[in-house]
Amino acid sequence: MKPKAAVVIIGVAIATGSSLGSIARSETDTRAIISPKDVKWAPAPASLPAGAEAALLYGDPTKEGLFALRVKVPKDYYIPPHTHPKAEVVTVLTGKFSLGMGPKADRTSAKPIDAGGFMAMPPQAAHYVFADEETVLQITSVGPWSIDYIDPRDDPRLNIAPDGRRGAAQRED
Image (cartoon, rainbow, N blue to C red):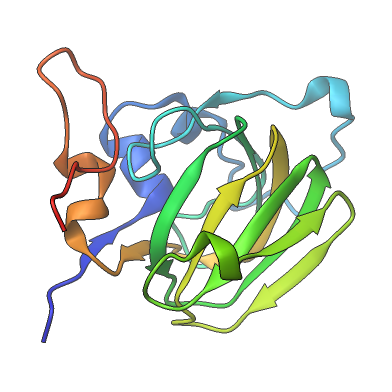
Protein backbone atom coordinates (compact mmCIF):
# COMPACT_ATOMS: atom_id res chain seq x y z
CA MET A 1 0.00 0.00 0.00
CA LYS A 2 1.35 3.44 -0.94
CA PRO A 3 1.78 5.66 2.15
CA LYS A 4 -0.26 8.85 2.26
CA ALA A 5 0.77 12.11 3.83
CA ALA A 6 -2.14 13.02 6.06
CA VAL A 7 -2.08 16.70 6.87
CA VAL A 8 -4.64 18.51 8.94
CA ILE A 9 -5.06 21.57 6.79
CA ILE A 10 -5.97 24.12 9.41
CA GLY A 11 -4.41 22.24 12.32
CA VAL A 12 -1.16 22.75 10.48
CA ALA A 13 -1.83 26.45 10.51
CA ILE A 14 -1.91 26.38 14.28
CA ALA A 15 1.10 24.08 14.54
CA THR A 16 3.16 26.19 12.12
CA GLY A 17 2.16 29.49 13.66
CA SER A 18 -0.07 30.67 10.83
CA SER A 19 -2.56 33.33 11.79
CA LEU A 20 -5.57 31.21 10.81
CA GLY A 21 -5.64 29.57 14.22
CA SER A 22 -6.03 32.94 15.86
CA ILE A 23 -9.22 33.75 13.95
CA ALA A 24 -11.08 30.51 14.68
CA ARG A 25 -14.47 31.11 16.26
CA SER A 26 -15.01 29.66 19.71
CA GLU A 27 -17.18 26.58 20.18
CA THR A 28 -19.81 28.74 21.87
CA ASP A 29 -20.38 30.86 18.75
CA THR A 30 -23.63 29.81 17.12
CA ARG A 31 -23.91 32.44 14.43
CA ALA A 32 -21.69 34.59 12.30
CA ILE A 33 -22.45 37.60 10.17
CA ILE A 34 -19.46 38.78 8.17
CA SER A 35 -19.60 41.40 5.45
CA PRO A 36 -17.19 41.04 2.53
CA LYS A 37 -15.11 43.99 3.75
CA ASP A 38 -14.64 42.25 7.11
CA VAL A 39 -13.17 39.02 5.71
CA LYS A 40 -9.65 38.69 7.15
CA TRP A 41 -7.20 36.98 4.80
CA ALA A 42 -4.06 35.26 6.07
CA PRO A 43 -1.47 33.01 4.45
CA ALA A 44 -2.92 29.54 3.89
CA PRO A 45 -1.47 26.73 5.97
CA ALA A 46 1.67 24.91 4.86
CA SER A 47 -0.38 21.90 3.76
CA LEU A 48 -1.38 23.88 0.65
CA PRO A 49 1.10 24.91 -2.04
CA ALA A 50 2.58 28.38 -1.55
CA GLY A 51 0.62 31.36 -2.80
CA ALA A 52 -2.84 30.70 -1.36
CA GLU A 53 -4.59 32.80 1.26
CA ALA A 54 -7.37 31.67 3.58
CA ALA A 55 -10.08 33.24 5.74
CA LEU A 56 -11.93 31.26 8.34
CA LEU A 57 -15.54 32.47 8.52
CA TYR A 58 -17.16 30.03 10.90
CA GLY A 59 -16.26 27.14 13.16
CA ASP A 60 -12.90 25.48 13.68
CA PRO A 61 -11.71 22.96 11.08
CA THR A 62 -9.40 21.36 13.65
CA LYS A 63 -12.36 20.26 15.79
CA GLU A 64 -15.61 18.33 15.32
CA GLY A 65 -18.35 20.44 13.82
CA LEU A 66 -19.37 22.59 10.90
CA PHE A 67 -16.98 25.17 9.46
CA ALA A 68 -16.83 27.60 6.53
CA LEU A 69 -13.49 28.57 5.02
CA ARG A 70 -12.60 30.76 2.06
CA VAL A 71 -9.48 30.09 0.03
CA LYS A 72 -8.05 32.61 -2.45
CA VAL A 73 -5.59 31.29 -5.04
CA PRO A 74 -3.64 33.12 -7.77
CA LYS A 75 -3.85 32.39 -11.48
CA ASP A 76 -2.02 29.18 -12.47
CA TYR A 77 -2.21 27.79 -8.91
CA TYR A 78 -2.26 24.00 -8.71
CA ILE A 79 -3.24 21.59 -5.95
CA PRO A 80 -2.00 18.07 -6.76
CA PRO A 81 -4.27 15.01 -6.49
CA HIS A 82 -5.57 14.54 -2.97
CA THR A 83 -8.51 13.34 -0.89
CA HIS A 84 -10.33 14.44 2.25
CA PRO A 85 -11.71 12.04 4.86
CA LYS A 86 -15.04 13.87 5.01
CA ALA A 87 -17.40 15.31 2.41
CA GLU A 88 -16.40 18.64 0.93
CA VAL A 89 -18.84 21.24 -0.41
CA VAL A 90 -17.27 24.00 -2.53
CA THR A 91 -18.71 27.13 -4.16
CA VAL A 92 -16.70 29.28 -6.57
CA LEU A 93 -17.27 32.86 -5.43
CA THR A 94 -15.04 34.63 -7.93
CA GLY A 95 -12.76 33.59 -10.73
CA LYS A 96 -12.54 30.29 -12.53
CA PHE A 97 -10.78 27.03 -11.86
CA SER A 98 -10.71 23.55 -13.28
CA LEU A 99 -11.46 20.47 -11.21
CA GLY A 100 -10.15 17.08 -12.19
CA MET A 101 -11.17 13.78 -10.68
CA GLY A 102 -8.89 10.82 -10.04
CA PRO A 103 -5.48 10.01 -8.59
CA LYS A 104 -3.43 11.39 -11.54
CA ALA A 105 -3.57 15.01 -12.67
CA ASP A 106 -4.63 15.49 -16.29
CA ARG A 107 -5.17 19.13 -17.26
CA THR A 108 -7.06 18.15 -20.42
CA SER A 109 -9.74 16.24 -18.53
CA ALA A 110 -10.27 18.81 -15.75
CA LYS A 111 -13.68 20.50 -15.92
CA PRO A 112 -13.78 24.33 -15.84
CA ILE A 113 -16.01 25.80 -13.14
CA ASP A 114 -16.88 29.49 -13.27
CA ALA A 115 -17.89 31.91 -10.52
CA GLY A 116 -21.20 30.75 -9.07
CA GLY A 117 -20.34 27.10 -9.72
CA PHE A 118 -20.88 24.50 -7.03
CA MET A 119 -19.52 21.04 -6.33
CA ALA A 120 -19.95 18.47 -3.60
CA MET A 121 -17.58 15.56 -3.21
CA PRO A 122 -17.94 12.50 -1.02
CA PRO A 123 -15.22 11.45 1.41
CA GLN A 124 -12.09 9.97 -0.18
CA ALA A 125 -12.89 11.28 -3.69
CA ALA A 126 -9.49 11.84 -5.36
CA HIS A 127 -9.35 15.22 -7.09
CA TYR A 128 -7.01 18.04 -8.13
CA VAL A 129 -7.35 21.73 -8.98
CA PHE A 130 -5.92 24.15 -11.55
CA ALA A 131 -6.71 27.86 -11.13
CA ASP A 132 -7.41 29.40 -14.53
CA GLU A 133 -7.43 32.88 -12.98
CA GLU A 134 -7.35 34.33 -9.47
CA THR A 135 -10.16 32.47 -7.72
CA VAL A 136 -11.93 32.57 -4.36
CA LEU A 137 -13.57 29.35 -3.17
CA GLN A 138 -15.77 28.79 -0.18
CA ILE A 139 -15.42 25.39 1.44
CA THR A 140 -18.00 24.08 3.88
CA SER A 141 -17.42 20.81 5.68
CA VAL A 142 -17.21 19.26 9.11
CA GLY A 143 -14.01 19.01 11.06
CA PRO A 144 -11.59 17.84 11.81
CA TRP A 145 -10.59 18.41 8.21
CA SER A 146 -7.47 17.08 6.56
CA ILE A 147 -5.89 16.73 3.15
CA ASP A 148 -4.22 13.49 2.08
CA TYR A 149 -1.99 13.83 -0.97
CA ILE A 150 -2.11 10.77 -3.23
CA ASP A 151 1.65 11.03 -3.73
CA PRO A 152 3.39 12.11 -0.51
CA ARG A 153 6.04 13.90 -2.60
CA ASP A 154 3.30 16.42 -3.48
CA ASP A 155 2.92 17.44 0.16
CA PRO A 156 4.31 21.00 0.18
CA ARG A 157 5.39 20.64 3.80
CA LEU A 158 7.92 18.03 2.75
CA ASN A 159 9.61 20.38 0.29
CA ILE A 160 10.75 23.35 2.34
CA ALA A 161 13.61 25.25 0.69
CA PRO A 162 16.50 26.53 2.83
CA ASP A 163 15.07 30.05 2.49
CA GLY A 164 11.75 28.89 3.95
CA ARG A 165 9.77 28.85 0.67
CA ARG A 166 7.52 25.85 0.18
CA GLY A 167 5.99 24.16 -2.82
CA ALA A 168 5.27 20.83 -4.51
CA ALA A 169 8.33 18.61 -4.77
CA GLN A 170 10.20 18.54 -8.06
CA ARG A 171 9.95 15.02 -9.42
CA GLU A 172 11.60 13.20 -12.26
CA ASP A 173 8.68 10.91 -13.12
